[in-house]
Image (cartoon, rainbow, N blue to C red; front, side, top):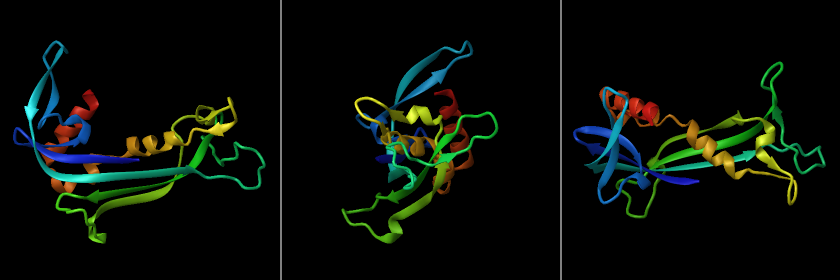
Length: 171
């Protein structure tokens, strides 16, 4: 899965936004009042940096099993339903100054490893029309686990990080 992420300047603060959130050079920001009601205002933004976030994930298969559903399990502990094991990789590439040419130095951040699925093993396979895993869900799961405030902290001030975390909690 490939996603374009921008660091934008909005009213003097830096924000991390998905490319889909910017419409006509503006983003919508939700404001809350003292009665927990909210209203949405459109604010103009200036793009400071642009990144591509590329996520890949695959279930780790057990070749000794003849079944279609042969992924390894990662135990959730005593009394918990097992979760499936998968391997993942994430690359964050800086494309701000790119003229359709990339260098190794454009790789801003990367990570890889193995992890267990967020949900139990039954949430990831279907039996009809044939038995198979829904492996496409893993890319989204890896993307949701990323802490963009930590990844992009070199471009954000302390107050920017605080405001981005508060916005994430409120959404």
